[in-house]
Image 1 (cartoon, helix red, strand yellow):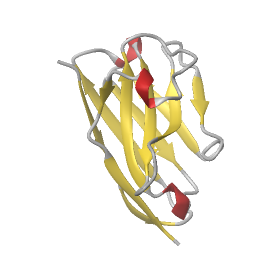
Image 2 (spheres, rainbow, N blue to C red):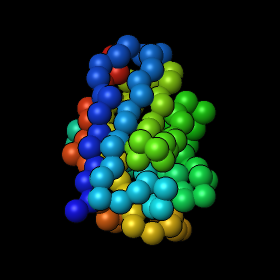
Image 3 (cartoon, rainbow, N blue to C red):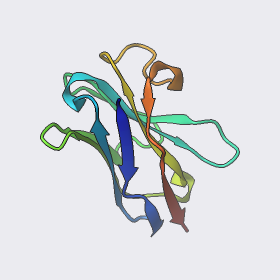
Length: 125
């Protein structure tokens, strides 16, 4: 059974960095579309970034230039390097996997089949 486990969250001051990891099991990250989403208290879960089978990447405008998504096929893991963090980046971060290639709706939560349990990121000013 497919499983995703996030780690790497924590508390940092504004301007700091964190690297989130998502370990996958039950399938290989090289063969699926994967994404990062986040959800702040009282808000809907929103798209952060995705990476396709061919390595193509997409980012939300709010994180473009600050966050970098990547995959390590040998470790079967997904990563999100977050730099220049802002208080508005505070949220629970989730990784997600879609069992086929990314599509035109892959910025939406309902396009994904598997989700991790989330890791909390808190950025103080």
